[in-house]
Length: 584
Ligand SMILES: Nc1ncnc2c1ncn2[C@@H]1O[C@H](COP(=O)(O)OP(=O)(O)O)[C@@H](O)[C@H]1O
Ligand SMILES: [Mg+2]
Image (cartoon, rainbow, N blue to C red; front, side, top):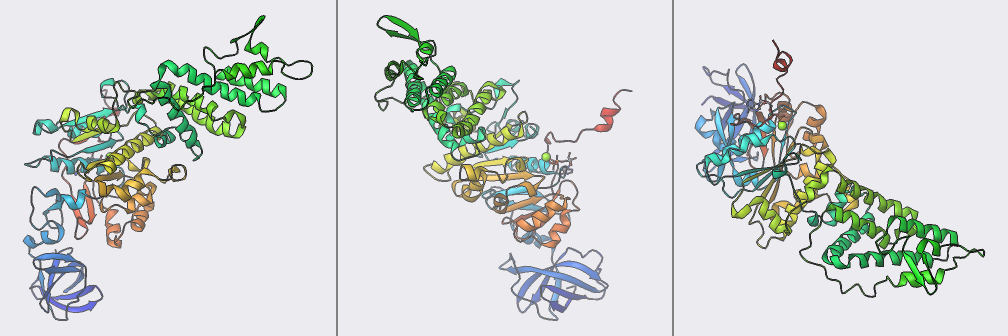
């Protein structure tokens, strides 16, 4: 016993220490208050002479700590210092079980290892936050190393890291030395390294994926993408008929113009402009039109006579009509069709004509933007990421990624260091959606949990315009529904205030390293449920590698000092002095 309860003020109690008790090292210690056969727990906040103030935090019931204050102690209740071997009841797991719990780090106040239940932490979304250099990357590497270094490692884990700087290769590439059944695979956007290039087959890109890649900003633009997708499948499924399909599309568009009733000069100009952009071998401005007696090319047939009419209007109509296909419904669409962005670019051209957008400048501009973008994408460096050398469907693609030849790759690392931020964001979104859809459609829900870890998550998980264009933001959707299907999101960020609010508020657990910027501390205070002023204060003064962990896997917020990872990620700051003074 160290003293007795003197006063109670709401959740704070004042304790008067017995004579001879050394009060010097009591701050942050846990107290047990024995009152009316109840064991209440308090944490010492401050000491003034023989008086200590403690905050009530919970109760010990059946040898388990229960967070929350329902009962208050009576005045004069006996107060004890909690024995060190009981402290894990509050800040760790009661009995560490290697198959169910993982070691997070040491609690520096009580010098106690912190065990965390794997299910309580990893079956819900979580955030790892903190200023740059506070220890996030090292922390993440260490947490997963702690899990992989167990006697029985997690052979069936499927962790995909979207690694903004390619830091994690160093921390995990040696996994198979620990156990031959552990595998790490790195993909990268580095074009110099074709063997491990990130490759996502173009034919797996859905309308929504393309809308993201092409930065569509209006829902109406989805129509043209849909059309282009159906055309590219049609063209690639029936290669011997492609020309006929294209002729059909061009002919219909031109017939529309010819029959529009507009002034002849306008009709002529429009036909000219269509055919100068959209043409096939059989149908272009130089195509010869035969007539008994003489032959002219198409251009010549568009001449306007003295009366202001296109003399050969009827001839032209008959000519174009022969390219119109009667019934296109019989066309086969090959289930296993493959195509690349070049094919898609070509299909976009025809989608534009086919949708009759040439008739309206306004719609034309809206659609043409997308066409210009797909053209740039197909002809730029990024098209390599959408080339794939054999047919796969989505499920096979995911299986080949995570379990090639049936061998499980526990960690797949996507290094997205070499592309611009926008593209990186879209790539991450497309993959995330693909995993989400896969999980959602899995027959036995939750039997193949996939874990997505996003480094620099604020670059991807933002309040984007997607909701207005697609009707959803994939990360909002994953944080709301992913858990049911076994898709868990881990967000790592130095700028929590730039993260989508919906996503962060859906996280169940938080590991927060030193956070200095007031905007971020304010944001953390606002958005995270149950965070106290105390925690916010502590966040500002943490040393690198020290964090506050709280959420549903923790009974109370716990201060944790993580061990340095071994090996560490490639995240060290530049050694400026040795770079500056390298020549002696
Ligand atoms: N657990 C740790 N113990 C001691 N020092 C650490 C620890 N974690 C990180 N550090 C130090 O902080 C530096 C930055 O860590 P890092 O994980 O790269 O930060 P962040 O990812 O938050 O920018 C490391 O290079 C290391 O020197
Ligand atoms: Mg980092």
